[in-house]
Amino acid sequence: AQTVTQSQPEMSVQEAETVTLSCTYDTSESDYYLFWYKQPPSRQMILVIRQEAYKQQNATENRFSVNFQKAAKSFSLKISDSQLGDAAMYFCASQGGSEKLVFGKGTKLTVNP
Amino acid sequence: DTGVSQNPRHKITKRGQNVTFRCDPISEHNRLYWYRQTLGQGPEFLTYFQNEAQLEKSRLLSDRFSAERPKGSFSTLEIQRTEQGDSAMYLCASSLEAGSNQPQHFGDGTRLSIL
Image (cartoon, rainbow over all chains, first blue to last red; front, side, top):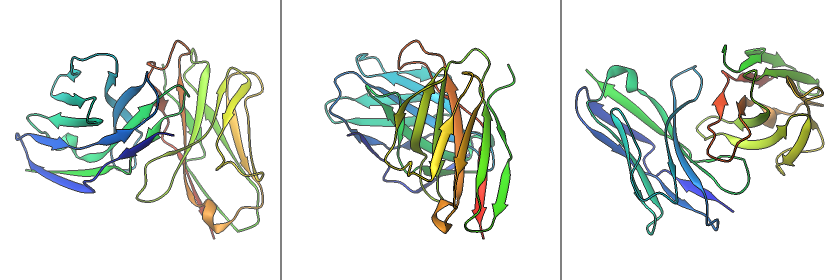
C-alpha cells in the first residue's frame, strides 16, 4: 500500500520570498511517480510538477522545483519568488503500479503581500 | 480542449435519496477516474475506467455506489440511499492511456450535501 504524509497543515510566505512544502511517502513499488497538485479555493485541482522515481534529476517547472530524496522517501516542493496567485492548498501525491493517485492531506499556503 | 466537466456543481438532498453525478472527460482521454474529497482531507480514489471497462474499485465504493461509462465517453456516479457520511466533494479526472506518467486532469467537482 502507498501512503503520503504532509506534516505541515499550513504555511505562509511573504510575496517574492521562497517557501518549501514537505512531503514524505511510503511505497513498496519499484517504479512510481510523484506529483504536486495545487487546489485554489473553489477551483479545480491543477498539476504543478511531477517526478519519475527512476530519474535522479530533480524536476523543475519555472518557479517550482522539487527536492527528491529517494532513499529518505522525501519529495518537497520549493516555490521561488512567491506570488499572490500561489495561495492555495497543495497536495502531494504518489502513483504506483495501480493507476490511482494517493494523496496527502494537503498544506494550505498563504502568501502575504 | 474544454477540460473535464462535472455536473451539477452542487447537489443538496435529503438523507435516503438517490443522486447521480455526471463527468465529461477531455475528449481524447480514455481513462477516467472518480475521487472523493472530504473537508480537510486529500482526495481518495473511488474507481477508474479505461474506455468503458471499470478496471479498479476502492473498498470505499460500497454497494450503494455505482459508476458507469457506457460508451467510453462520459461517466456517471450514482449513490443510492444517501447517508450523512456521503457529504463530500466528488472529483472526476481523466488522462491519456500511455503509462502512469500521464497526468490526471481534474474537473471542478460536484459538492454533495446531505440534509
